[in-house]
Length: 298
View 1 (cartoon, rainbow, N blue to C red):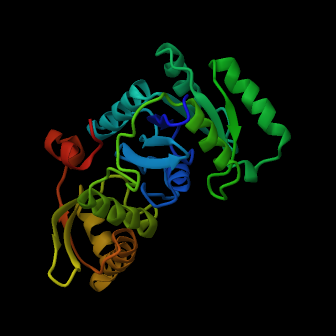
View 2: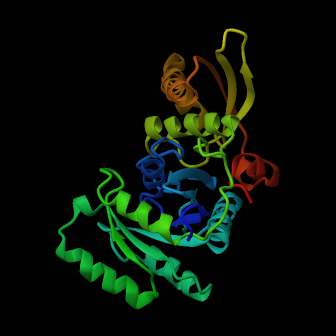
């Protein structure tokens, strides 16, 4: 590469649910681009994080966790993940070092091998395991799938992340940068608003409201005073889930709205007026129209 040439390319982050992909994306980008929760299957969109590393622009794609799909929404999520892998310059297989070579990881490895994708292997959460187990895990995964470079890191603490970024920056193809260097993401503000509301639903309802909740931003308006008015609708499939989300006297939905508003004000750097409505819409996750509007990009 000449002294003045640039590099740019796509890096797909793949893994089983809860491998830590969204945490790693946010750590690498230095900003909150993908929602994070203790629950699996949080990511529904291929979020693009844009990271400048020297003369290289790294375009990070956070795919949905790959799992056995049941609903139309599930199938669309898994399809989006595999499309991200096949179209990327580099695929990174992220594995939770604590849980190791699970059946889920084996299934992903088998599909990667079938698609002739040789991923970089990243063992995450190394701060939570004994070091001797990491070599054995690497060998076990390599026996299932030919892998490229191997990295061991903690997305939560940041340990080892810089080494991964440096290696990616050097391995991507020579190319002009595809986005302005000060951009962090291609995620539209309306979608970011919906995702941050959905994150609070995950964090504040625990096991009470499953993955049948969806959020749509119906209005996103910058006001004359610089503040932003956001109106979002939360759709659920059952009356019981609607009652849980609203809470006694509206307490739960107010708490969700307050926390989401704070996150939005931090992300958008403007005062935010957030208005939430909860609607019962049975079967929304099997509706082609609603899955297109609230599920993964395809």
